[in-house]
Length: 333
Image 1 (cartoon, rainbow, N blue to C red):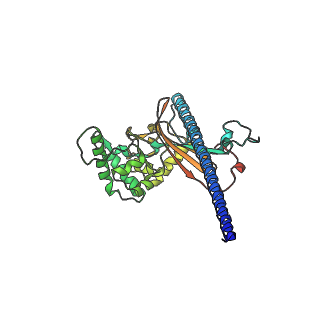
Image 2 (cartoon, one colour):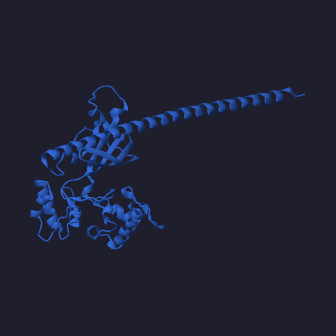
Image 3 (cartoon, rainbow, N blue to C red):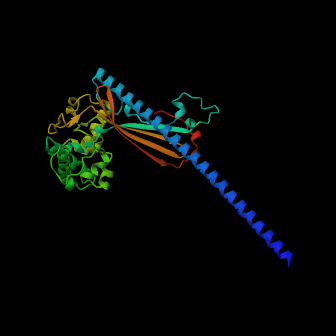
């Protein structure tokens, strides 16, 4: 019997078994490390999500406080809402530690020192409200003409607007219990206006000039852009609208009576369609944590000194940083 080949085969099997054992151990170890790393990443993401929520909620509360104090000032001075007020001045990106009165020169490396906050408040009554297309159970012809003028300025085809208004009327009647089998749902947020027959491309073009609010609203002549002024005031051309903007920058309107001397006699102001004050605002907060940007948009309504949040929508994205965050000075505008 040849013993040498037998022993060699035993050594080969033992070597193979050892290699398999090492491979199995390495695989198990790497799997355990990956699971541990994944758990840490999930925990970090959840912690960042919670912290982002707290910070953005604080930013919203801060904006509501600004709007409430503005309402108090307006009550005392009988002033209107205009673009020179504190609420209209945006917050440029600032290091979060500047709000916490922390010493950024220290050695603390907590996430708060790498978080940057920015945001702004916009007057939603500076835009045409799609809800205005109906009034008292029928299509509002005056509001429809406003939208037609806006569409024409933006190079959009207004031919479908009567159908949009009719769809809105049908949706409102269905929401009240009337039998409309083919009625669309009544929008609750501005992007849902597409349900009424406005194409996404049209909606993207209309975004700076239109909105959706849960009731009829007047256009604030203190804050409306040129295109909205031309649309809201029948007979007003772009040159006259620019003069109106220049005049309100020098002296904001307190009431509609202040606007009348600046208009031709054939241009009519209506109380329910035009105003110098606003109740609805959009609050946008942006929080940047390293390469992650979290943005929240909220719609708030102001009734006297009470500022109530109607909706909140949060989105997240990855951003490319062009410079190191630590080298950026914090500033409040």
